[in-house]
Amino acid sequence: MSRLSLFAPDNFPLIQPGQPLLPAIVDALTQGGQPLADNDILVLAQKIVSKSENRFIDLGDIVATDEARDYAARCLKEPRFIQAVLNESAAVVRCVPNVFIVQHKLGFTLANAGIDQSNIDPSCINEEHRELALLLPQDPDASAAALRRQIRDTLGVNVGVVISDSFGRPWRLGTTGVCIGCAGVEPIRDQRGQKDLYGRTLQVTMPAIGDEMAAAACLLMGEASEGRPIAVLRGLEVIEADLPATALLRAGNEDLFR
Image (cartoon, rainbow, N blue to C red; front, side):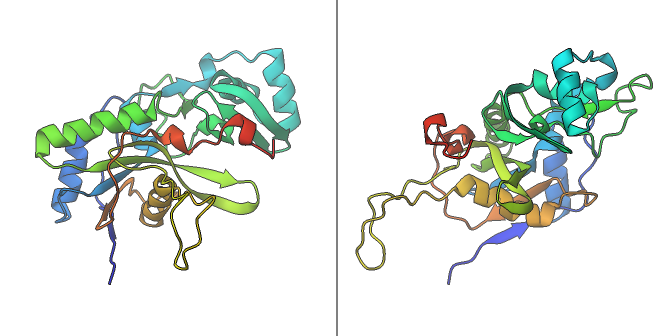
């Protein structure tokens, strides 16, 4: 019988700007009686990684261009927020009332370039900054790799690390966890050329392992006020690989829907 365990500590502290993540991770898991072990997969919400890396911006410091004001009028959003989104974007994909979808500079296609204002304490930097928003990590794969090295060097255990964010999907309602950064795990598995149960050669099968791990972890981590920004998957047979999470991105010439 195959089995997979998934757990998330309830006592994780609120991460402050620039605060290292590893001590908080170790304390929370140790107090919960589940310290990290070899072959665990540690999944982190993007938000705590961004907070730790001080990826805050103050919308009060942003001046909206005419382009931003035009998009803001069309999607009914605040012009300075739209300018912040444009600053992080390579292209605008859709702009309709209440929806602004872009291609992020990192390659991801998502709403608002992943910029978020939820679960942010406006006084976490200083009393003058009241319109804070949080950007994605500058390089999520590098963030995952650095944390994985810290865990190995400090705890002596070999784990995989996945950074998860919540994305919507074009043809389905709701959001789901998506892998935007990883280290020590196989983000996508190419099974083309293998045989199915009846000997038929697989032609297109490429499971998105990174996204599946992120989505599974989000069942415990939640999306709102749960306060569980990390989860651990234990018992999953994952092939260690050096592929970045960007390996999950479809090439532009294969995008049939944009």
